Image (cartoon, rainbow, N blue to C red):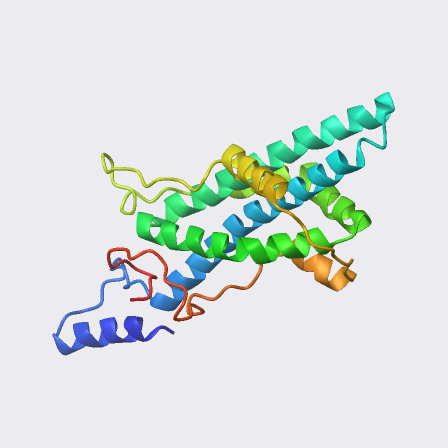
Length: 235
């Protein structure tokens, strides 16, 4: 049980006040951190999807369309459309989750800073994965179930008027799916690769999963934006 909750009850008892079941407990830092960690994983997954899509597009362009049959082209177009649907649904879930939690602009900035800081490492790993593994990960990102599951989760989000008062300015969202994918494609085309080796399935599997980036892993040489004090942010 969070210490803040125990202290809140003790303080009311010391003041001779009865505990009302309708009283809201103070937000515990560890709960807020877990919420922000989950949001970061969702945003990281969006970025990973775009990195894989950019790598796949780059390899196809360099190799020069090996499959030219009408059936292969139609299948590729279907996958592209489904990928964009999935990316859009996952983005909507991430931004909806952030809105329901009342995630502030400084918190969103910190999350996006951490995701972009990890991008070069993720992109490098993606470039070393062999073609068969890229194709397998891509097919997973194109599965219709991905959009269906994200849509079901989005429908479960219930707005909290206390966190989102009417008339207040809305925080800026994370980059749109189009912007994320365009940026990943641009960075891949501008990259001048050195000679690389293929990796094992264990390393490749890390691309399709969300990396574990804790909220206290900043080194002295990594300084995130300086936001106003807000819940869940380290000083």
